[in-house]
Image 1: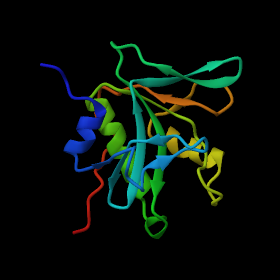
Image 2 (image 1 turned 180 degrees about the horizontal axis):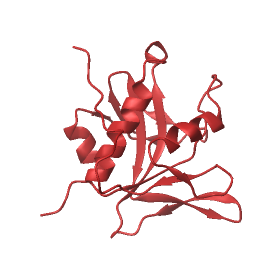
Image 3 (image 1 turned 30 degrees about the vertical axis):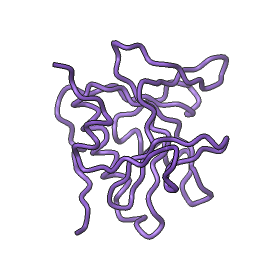
Length: 162
């Protein structure tokens, strides 16, 4: 029996999948590329499954993953403005990393602020380090988190308020 992938695990945890082609709330990067997005309790995340980040001549590159190694890029973690400063990003990272661990998935990201808000690259790097990410670039521009095989102190689940 094939193990579930991270996207399936997120759906099983109550995340709603937004279609990249038609949904108005999907994440769109600065180049205009639309990404399938998952949404739950005022938080949206965009994942690229079966992709990873690497460095080539000081530049972050996106690569297709090896089929034997589950990998995903966290493209965006967006907390709605009225939900900020309430711990939702931390709860989401705890849930995402717990589910990635259960699926044995390596997570990659670039710690870049998506908006001109008080968050800095250094602040994001520090936040992601709390959840097991480490720098793969030597410059703080790309991070990876291998799956952890033992239970973490940072487990949690983001719940809908109904």
